Image 1 (cartoon, helix red, strand yellow):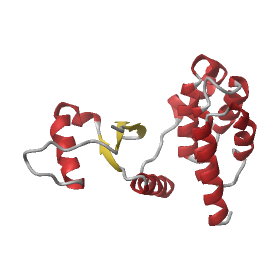
Image 2: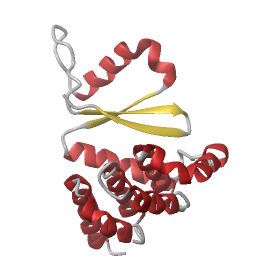
Image 3: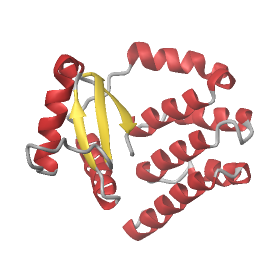
Image 4: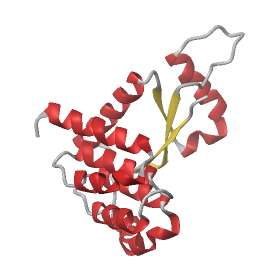
Length: 184
């Protein structure tokens, strides 16, 4: 797929997700068949944003199919989207259990690193920064977060660093990534 076509489809998927219009679900389902993993990832996210609005059966069926995607980030976003559908996702439980029991997301793959670079660029374009924190950081969270924020936006010692516009990515395990965005 040409890069310009991929960018156009990716932007379209983002726009469809932002509309929160259940009528776009069929179009999003069609976009799940695009050759671009980046577009499929964004489409899975957009379908998740339609939870509670769109036909849950059709959305869950499409997302369940996406759980078998060859790209880990597409699967990851499909899992997150299915979570948004709650009990309507019951038909996907067998696949979700299989993923939980057998799948190891390798954080050092080229696809993962490229995906994180793209995510970082999107955050930067929106005026945000991505900060990684690990469970072992929790006891010293304030100090670690303050230190990382100071590296991004130095402030004088009299004022506390602001977390506005910062997306925080936490790793629940070294091989699982969850996204938490904070905006104030």
